[in-house]
Structures are given as C-alpha cells and as structure tokens.
Length: 427
Ligand code: GLY
Image (cartoon, rainbow, N blue to C red; front, side):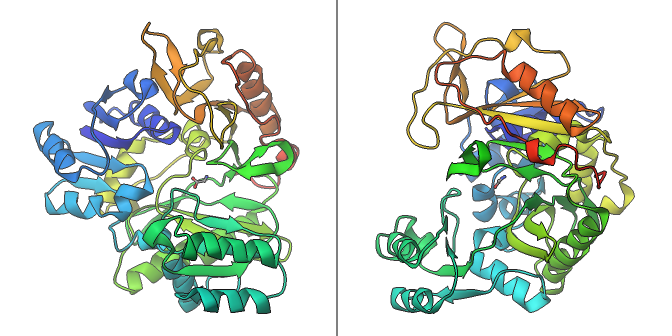
C-alpha cells in the first residue's frame, strides 16, 4: 500500500515510525515531514492547506491511503475533498470535525446527549459575555469557538482575567473569526486523561489511556505549551473509571454523531477530567494528541496501517488491536524561551549515544548547512522509552534525555512522576 501522511510534528513522526513497520506498506510519503520522517519515508514539500497539490500528488504517486495528522486541514475539509477524488483517507469529514473545530458545537452536542461537561454559556455579543462573567461564581474558562492554533482556550482565575480574555477574543479579535462566538464555562480542577479511540463511525476500538503535561515547568507551573511530555498508562485511573470514560464519553459521542447524521470516522480524542467526584469532558479532539501519540504508538503491537485502512473503509469490526502491557514515558525537549520566543539553528548533539530501544521523535528540527541536525522550532524532540512499569520507563527516558544537548535545551523533569506507583489500571 502507498501511504501519504500529512504533517510535520513529533506526532506525525510517531505515526510514520509505526506505519513503517507494517508488512502491508509499499511506499510511505510524508508531507512536509521533518528530518525524523526523512529517515523512514520520502518527505514531500507540500503545504497541508494546498488541497489541489495534495490531490495531484496522491494521483501521481498512486496513494492508497492518506492520513491527515493535524486538525486544521481536517477542519478545512481535506478528508471530504480526498473522498470526492476517490482517495481513501483517515480522518473525519469537515462536518464531523466540528466536534473539535467548534467549541459551541461540542458543548451543545454534550448537552443534547447527556455527556458530562462543565456548566457553560455561549455568547455572540461582548456585552452578554461580560454580564455572564459578572454574575458567575468561581473561576472560568473563556474559549474562542473556532480553531486558534491551540491558543483559543484561556483559563482564568478572576473576573478581571476572564473579562480580559473576552476583550482579547471578541474586541481585539486576537484569533480573528474564530472568536466571533465564545463559550464561557466553569473552570474545573483535577487530573486529566486523554482517551483516544479509533472509530469507523460505528465500531469503536479504544486505545490505552495516556496523560499530557501542558505547562512548561515542573509542578505544572508557568504558561501552557503544546505539551511537554506524556505517559501511558495512568495507573491512578481505576478500571471502573476507564470503563465509564469509554462508555459515557467516547462511545456516547460517536453514537451521537452517527444519530445526528454526521458519522465520525478517524481517531476521537476526548480530554476528560476524572476524580473521585466523577468525570467531566473538557474537550474533544479530532486527531491524535501530541505528545500522546509518542507514548501510544510504542505500546501498539498490532499493525497501525491495518487499523487506519479499516477505519477509512468501515471495516474496523474485523480488526483486533493488541497493546503492550509495558508503560511508556515521552519527554519533550524544547528550545529555551518556548512557549515564548526562542532561537533556532542550534546544533543538536548526543543522538548517536542513545540506547537502541529508545525512540526519538523529531518535531522542530532541520538539517543545517553543514548537514548537522539543528533546532528549528519550540518543541524540538520527544524522547520515548518503554519499561515494565512507569518508573522503569521514566528512568530509561531520562537517562537518555541527559545524553542529548543543544544550547538552551529545556525539559520537564517530572513527566509521569506523580503517577509512579499508582498501578490500579493496566491500559
Ligand atoms: N496533547 C494536547 C493536544 O494534542 O492537543
């Protein structure tokens, strides 16, 4: 099978890494890819928003399956366009992707179908949003309705900061039309899990649970990032909690989408807060999490290409996915200054000194003029390691992280630390 994978992050490197192990794979192309994917596949210099060029290349290279990694091209209708052109694609349609691309749609879907989520209001007008904030009790989260490159969800801790968020989104139009409407919801506190599942619209194949660490500094201090590391499984979530998330959130949402005439195909990734008082959905995502993908695919023992093909062709019921009992920890190495401004072009050393069973997924890397690998983004690499338990996986990941060097390199030292020794769940 010839496969075209769209994207350039560590998530796409992880997908490419797993696809490249498939006996069903003939040729793998990644567009635009990164130096990591170049070692496994042929990188093609195509922008994910150039749908005409993507279709042309799919036809020229006889692509059997296109896999779309990130939310923007999915929300803009790339899967719909590929389908019209007769090219099988992994990912939801534009209508189905509204579960991520419209916060208003997601909240209303949850309300209609009894999926637990924080109390909220939806506002088209600044004055109404401000009145809601004035009357609210407790802290709030202000969300731009549309996609805003991960920056449109503003977590606030006072009425003043919530009002500032409304000013930013609705008056200053920091995210353009994505902020024409806002959702304002009660802020929730507690541990979060990422609950990925494959689905062809009817059949659901749950993946193991995983957890991201979004703030830049240890102890969850500092501003949020795209994700500074992940681990799987979260042993603190017991099997009953896992079963509830799977049934009350993931399966309910997929059935709801089907019943409402917009069947959802691809990967559904709900972010769910779980604690002793129950569960609450924070968001739905229409693609794999990053860095969650970097700890999920090392645990996948089955053929990823077979699963993606089955999703695209409505045959997921015939696929049995096996996952390793081992734990996986992925530590993101970031440029100094990220998520603010940072320098690029800095040589990366030490990758040749790593243990052979540790996997390094590239994101913001490039080949420098002299052929050396250099930094080229905020999140540079994810170092992923498996172990018989979380502690062993953590030790292995960090022992290898310490052998990698670039000027200003920053990483969290507590990825998975709080979950070590919590072994209630096995998935
Ligand atoms: N792990 C956060 C995200 O992928 O959105």
